[in-house]
Length: 451
Ligand code: DOR
Ligand code: ZN
Image (cartoon, rainbow, N blue to C red; front, side, top):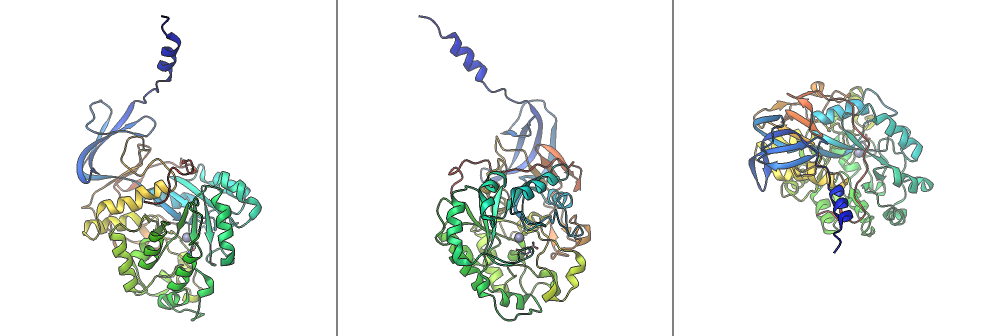
């Protein structure tokens, strides 16, 4: 019998060349349901190679008692670039703030100037990411221009649909046109995030003077009505609802197996929290009772994603009378640190926060990171739970220079590794602007509906 040399040679050739171990990060991590000592081997390509005891002699960094976590993904930021205002944010300043807050990837919204409704504008924004962004950026496009939709689906990272007017969005499509649009978008396979408020339910007072009146003007029923317009969305559509504000939204969306996110400001602040225009946001902050119910749902692990809706506006505009102030609060740098502080105080479990901030959002965007697992990109952070910081807007890194969480306690990451390379050291940014534009890497159907 003639041996099959060709086949053997081919199979030897096909054997993948295993990248060498470049470094080892040692510390404690949440693995297998508990915090335990681990050594994480990171290969030359910046991927996690193994998690456990490592014997090779690559450079080893031991973080001692600190905890190694996956870096977060923030599904929802507004970096005002292009179009400004520059004293609110840019891709450069916003991504450095994100890196310092432990965020490895942001989804950047299309309500910049001009709005991202066509491929040329999207590509112009993508060109601004390269050479300026400290972390990866997934770009949303708006699907409002029918003839651009198919081409945008091939170039953008996700779609964002506004069902109500808000910053940079003068008009929204009529709610009765939404089901048809959703059917069309379902064929295009891109994740779709929806700003769900029905302007038909907005009401008195027309000129709100504070957060409580803003809540009355854009009330909870406006959100629930908008959610109802999504009820018959095709199962194939990767549908996600942005910034839900109440436990009732949580129950409804879970019933319908629709993905969604909640923001730190809706989880931690209510209409009673701060005076003036500091807490004007769309959808509005709700009553303290609504907030507590939402927080309880989050604690129970019922909120799949945490997202900041980082929407900075120039500090000067915060002192405008409430009805003239723009809506939106910054939050990309403080999202995870605020929640980690709640872990420290025992109000929420670490795995619940990791799942909502790191794992689930990365999977929603079809990205290979968000877990401490072999094959994942080594986007990791190191957190010392003993090191607490009082947040001060002027010490944060967003260009806007303010935070609605002034004086709140937070736990900022001590270190941040991007593809295994340290970009934050001792709480200082030490990286370079090598962030890339990413798109979902999944084939349709692989990620499936939210779990
Ligand atoms: O409060 C908000 N601000 N809500 C939005 O939907 C947009 C955002 C912004 O871009 O300022
Ligand atoms: Zn937003």
